[in-house]
Amino acid sequence: MTAATMTTEAMTTEAVVTGIGVTAPNGLGTQTWWDAVLQGRSGIRPITRFDASGYPVRLAGEITDFVDEEHIPSRLLPQTDRMTRLSLVAAQEALADAGVVPAELERYHAGVVTASSAGGFEFGQRELQALWSKGGPYVSAYQSFAWFYAVNSGQISIRHDFRGPSGVLVTEQAGGLDAVGQARRHVRKGVGLVVTGGVDASLCPWGWAAQISDGRLSTRTDPATAYRPFSADASGQVSGEGGALLVLESADEARRRGRRPYGTIAGCAATFDPPSGESRLGRAAELALADAGLSPQDVDLVFADASGVRAEDRAEAAALAGLFGVRGVPVTAPKATVGRLSSGAGGLDLAAALLALRHQIIPPTVNVGQPADDCPIDLVTDRPRAARLRVALVLARGRGGFNAATVVRTAS
Image 1 (tube, helix red, strand yellow):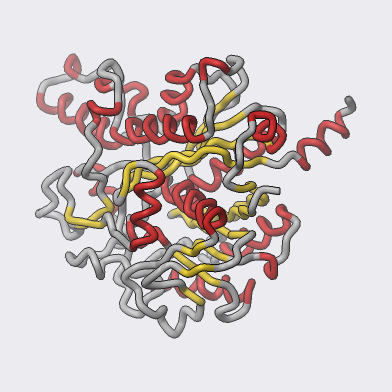
Image 2 (cartoon, one colour):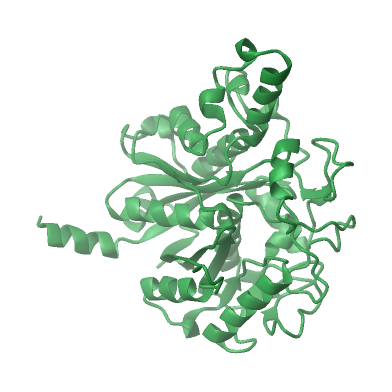
């Protein structure tokens, strides 16, 4: 086989999603979370993981029903941060959903590519406290890696003995989509399967100090009004923890295994905003559609980044109007039920897009009502909307100027 033939095959190999695993503030497990999304049941609530009474921001999308000891082997508890524990659970569900038995795979058949925004903040905080209060001998040796950006990829790989290509993407909220794009490249190059997406968690005093520092988080205390993307009275963002991991493999491999894919990752793209601050989110969407061989007229649904910051909502609405025309395509933001999950957001939105395609239903954006006049989009609110869906566009923006777009479509 020539290099040219290999390149052509790589460019035409379809990467499909055969497994989904979710850990979200409004539901542990994919079905529980999806039911909550369709019912508009929110996981945004007052923070309980630490005393937030002295902070101006006191709400978050917090996972309250995750008991670590019920999900994680005791030997792993001393060496893992909360985000890693959530990731291990999501990966386990995704693999089971895909019908994958890791012990039956060839050692180098599978890889792991995840996203991370800040690493294991809570683990790092505990060890810093030990250092300050007791001294260096009391700092865990696991600190050398438990905080690290790539630790989720590493721990998932170790647990399932995956020796294929692995890595981590660090582009904040855009990271989950960027990780899936990298995983898709691996599948196209012949890797058997890749666990990919993102799960994040930094609801601790140290993590909270970092998140509230730029003033983007809402200071409202009512969970129903704190995060209202595209609304005229939007007051900022609500942070959260959790996310989703997906099993990505070639369409041929899925057929060989007799698996019905949720959908195809048809197009991926990323851009970066220039120093002038001009948004290039729309350009990322254009590039993703071009990568998929599709036009804006082919898109049936958009999963918005949905900042909740007025200026950014206006910029996203303008980008969508530029692509699809004013109110030209239905738009939704189910993240309004969980908050913005940093690197976990992209994977969770992709999971929602894939389930929307499978069930032919658009999940609602809760607590918004009608979008603001300067955000002229067809925002699906209040209740789910039945629709004929073949193609969905998922958008994400990360702090610092990162933009990502992913096109998913029903599997052929």
